[in-house]
Length: 498
Ligand code: GLY
Ligand code: MN
Ligand code: MN
Image (tube, rainbow, N blue to C red; front, side):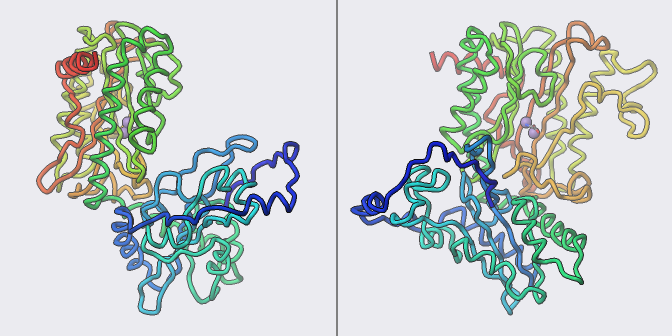
């Protein structure tokens, strides 16, 4: 349920019955808002079947979540909960306050029922007077028939949800995705608790469901892989728009914001938006891993680390980093750091194949990082590569690369977040997994252990890869990675765009 907005009573105007009548009349018939099953919904049905098989006889409640107040009477742009999007095929900004219930049938399967706020009639106050939901204010929503056609499931009015959620209370186990909608969770906890069920048991049962839904995304189906390809392709367009705008970004001041805006424009135009706040980090800012303030200048001679991804309407997002010389050419010191990171990424990529563990990718990449740090004489006296890589003793290299090399990627940029260590880091890679490979090196401007020539240089290279039957496919291979290729790419894009 939505957080409450402040009503601007001081700006409200009285509405007479005569005006209501006048507004309600003389509208052309509505056209159906949906003409067939959406592509996303076709695949969502198979995912719901997998959930159904894991929880026979139980009622499963998966809310989209509600609108969240940004300030006063304005809301953040809505984004449905990832599990809801995955199981319905609804992405973009749809459908605030909706709840999916998988209702158990006697034969062990489930009926999928979507409770939502359908289009209000033109004879209602909501139609013209509700700034949060009304058609005059935020546009028309689907009807019940529209949503059933689009999603291939049963749809009902949200007003019927409360009774449906507690039907046969005490006889049927009800599990809920807790983090989608706080108010609804509180309400269902009250309704589910009894003398025999305590809150810890409820929470534990709910967490089992959340865990299952998160790990269901560890491998992607063919449609999801296609969505990832499209997200990556749109992201390449965004990077190329930024490359074309680099001279302007240098000239204008606050170049980081210019870069953020240019990438954001492409993301909004080609997709739903950015999959996470873009990291547009020039010069020393690149040594801050999640630099999203983007307040800095981009100076001639700087590197700019751009870590950004376009999210599709389906909510699948790319997550790609390129570190680009603002003037098109790396300095010797920048190139030295860049090439070390590139070598580490190559080693990480080579470790992506079924049978290898997820953590083998990081192990391969970080070894190359450690080798370079050792060769540069940056590890403590007497500490060699093996010693720093030793889990229990060394790890000195982490001063310059403190993050991991890979994470799962999909509807969430850090996808499958509830998988256990055994299912994630320690698990074997399987075909259909999509992950990032993103080593980096970060030498802060005030790092007195770093060679002077490296101070203020941060480099990360990040690609999105699909695990295949015998290795991997780099989904972002069309975006150049070596230092020489990056320079050629900048020349080519800037020439092409004049
Ligand atoms: N963009 C955040 C990350 O690379 O994980
Ligand atoms: Mn990233
Ligand atoms: Mn990443």
